[in-house]
Length: 394
Ligand SMILES: O=C(O)CCC(=O)C(=O)O
Image (cartoon, rainbow, N blue to C red; front, side):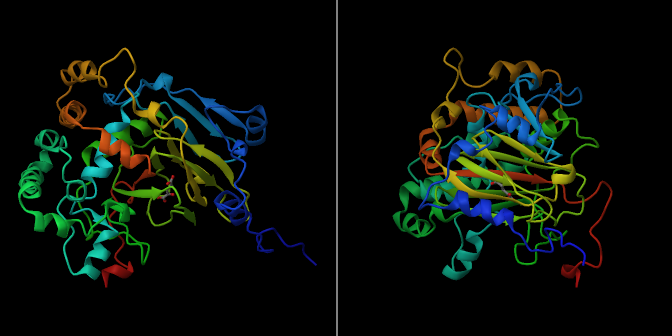
């Protein structure tokens, strides 16, 4: 009789490890996590962890929120080929811009959120800007920042009108408050992922944010990905300290050769990365704010999950300016905007405005309670169109 493989035996090692890290009754031993800030020789050996040396890409300019690539800490794992973990990507307070985008800008229409479904149940429209509606007294940098975003001038006008409303119309404010920011779980950008049938459609699409496109192109260029990454869809997940994300694979994109770029912001998390079946025991990685993970090669289709979010010991220091410096890299903007005329200049100006005007405290207060993750995907192969036979074409 042929021996059964571990798959045929229906062994689910992924679930076993997931449950261990999720468990609240018997808290897991966090010292068992692979911590790229403090790598143990045991983990180095067990997973074949190697440091990757990165070159500054020569075909794309570095945005001012980023550290030079030679100081990025990038690691690969022989046991999980194609997975890259990178830390020290952002300057000390370089993450503030992305936090602002995830909390203030990305949850606005036409981007799709889980609240759109709550909205249907409540029979009312979600506010134009959820953040401003939920935190009406907070002045944001948006009006300045968005003036420079080519696509956003209409939105800026609407938002500033809305700001007026917050201060003058209490009925409107109490209506808006029916939407709680804490109920936000996800936002989709670009091609909007359909969670029911797990597909993308050419007809369900909004503009992909040019800044996020630029950032993901820069990161993929820095790790030497070729051909050029084409960011077309993103999912922003919003976690609370008690949230989890179950084991899943990302199969819905048509191009599985293109990597997934995943950026963590806020509190720490345990990230599990397994194999293409649940029979592979996953590695448990400690993710911190600003960490970037790349899933490519044979881990592009691997099971992964977030069984735990937990309070970071270094939360504040992730976002603080370096003691000696003023806000992030404005000198870099000025030097570099001289050199190039494409949307790098627009994005740089927009970033500069956010850094100059952002009242950080409410964003920090929100982040103390949770975590966000942006995962950026290429949906189609270069030159490919949506297959005609997809169910949503009928
Ligand atoms: O939050 C994370 O780190 C992972 C997110 C993820 O796996 C996904 O959005 O598919």
